[in-house]
Image (cartoon, rainbow, N blue to C red; front, side, top):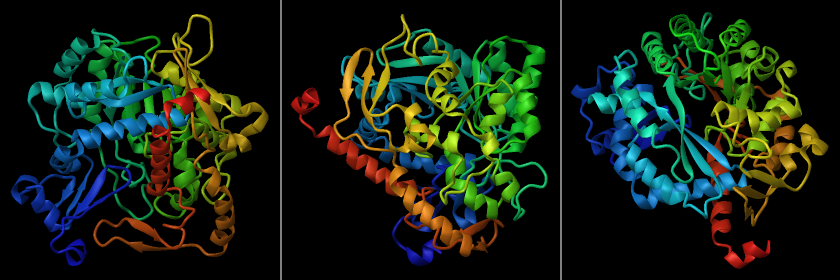
Amino acid sequence: MLDALFPETPVILWQRSFHETYLNTAAINQLGLQAQDWQDHPQIDWKRGHFFETGFKPILMGLLPYFLRPEWYGEGLKQMVDLMRMGGITTAGDMLFGAISPEYELAALHKALPEGASPLRVVNVFDLRSFSNRTSGAELGPPDQAIAFDRGLEAIEKMWVDGPQGHVWFARGIKLFADGAIFSQLMKMRWPGYLDGHEGEWLMTPEILKAGVLEAFKRDWTVHVHVNGDGGMEAVLDALKEAQRQFPRFDHRFHVHHVGYHAQAQTSQLAALGAHASVNPYYLHALGDDYAQVGLGPERATQLVRCGSMVRQGMRVSLHSDFMMAPAEPLTLAWCAASRQTRTGKIMSPSERLTLHQALRAVTIDAAWALRLDDEIGSISVGKRADFAVLDADPFASGVDGLLDVRVMATIFEGQIHVNPHPSPSSLAASRAASHDASTASAQAVPSAVEASSAKRWRLVGGDCNGISDRCDLVRTWSQWLNKALLASSVPTSVLKNG
């Protein structure tokens, strides 16, 4: 199809999860990829130009010379800082530090977060696989490729001992991966699997994941694991059980990340093993309606991101955006977790809601706790750093329904005031009425589905798929955020000082 439409122009279709791409022949040739090097990779379909999960690596490496140009990468970080400030963020966790180049990433972060002028800090969690492969001279291979985790942790230890550098800090934490992305329905699902019969994918097979968890536990590092399906969660639980058996630890703060769908029984197992969760509550809002019809079915789709169950079992739950998988707006994330409202206005599994208080904790003190920084940030207390957001309304007075209308007027970071020149409500607020109207139409006309030719993955086709109320498509809202950030950056300093 791409070759027919674009026989000469290189074209890459990039799935919004950033976990898979489709390329036409011209793009493959432009990147210098050769069939003999990649056609046998289990996560590359060479004939279809489909590169996904670990098979995405040759595409990323071919594009890095473009992406890492200072005028792109540096400007991108600058705009990201503006967006986070507008959202009221004073501390952000980078959960994949070192994936490209630690030295390059650090230099770029220091430039984007100058001491004395930055409105926020970044706390880096180390990408253990990338450090391990780089140290051992290995390339990123398929999910079952052995990884020298011990060598990676040795390299990470040397960098970690240097401690905080200005507004760039290091957490004593590492990141590992279980299964694939939820937005592309490549997470691993237990029986009965996907409705259309396609299989999910591993980013690390259970054996490799377990080896990484064991090495990190042995060296007393906090482990954060990307996991999206109940099949992936099964592998995570098995690894954590073995780690606690071999190297038992108190207060290990093992965290599962994203947590798209997992079974209720797995919540009890996570809690019993002392695990906690950093979740993306936007999944339910963006995907609940569609996944109830395609891939998962209503029973599982309505129970995406089981925050309520986890809190009731005694787990700490924090919220993250995984930007651009969700807006970089903590109050929006809190609304998603406390309302469990989908794009069409449906309320799914209200028993899995967080209370307003729990949701606000999840973007403040419990998020700080996940990074082991709750003694310094996350609440306003004597002896802690003076980091907080100034809002135009009391969230407790506004209630859950009013969270989307609360504006961030300014942030206070380490005692310095950073005024938002253009405070605005949540990026979801403007579409709330349109989404409510769309729910009536959706109830009357269910979108049809078509089957992808060879992968047996069903896709929704209909007006709701790319309509104006489709919050799944963040490209539209991202452009709005960037425009706001650029406007903010162009306001004279005198205006900022005068409020």
